[in-house]
Length: 181
Image (cartoon, rainbow, N blue to C red):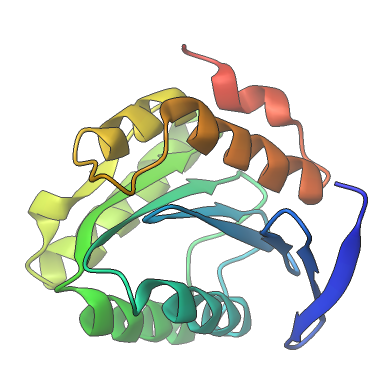
């Protein structure tokens, strides 16, 4: 990713790539077909969440359904109260359209279990535990999303490529994407 144009702004600078990758302050996303693809690098705080949810809302409003696929890196942290409220508002708004949400925590066993527990609790409280999944690898997460694919869902390789681009945009090691293939 070498060419960028200025995009939306929040508490800090955000840029939009000409390839449709949006890199923000510790969070990046892309829309690929009917799939929202996200990487959380920094702590999950309300400012980042609000920016992400507002930006992705513009993309999913016109879709009949969509999937949400995210990587949570070990440099992130669990959401604080304000962030959980932002996430709940977004989830409630788009619950009728959300086919599936898949989270892929990257890190040691403790971190993976922390992320798994938090994500499951959020979905149990909303009565949507049957639509949320936590996988051990990015490849498994992509395959899970593809299991509920529509005609608009991109190929496995297109989703993996999107994650690689997001990670490179955040100056992270993109090789984690295809491990476990």
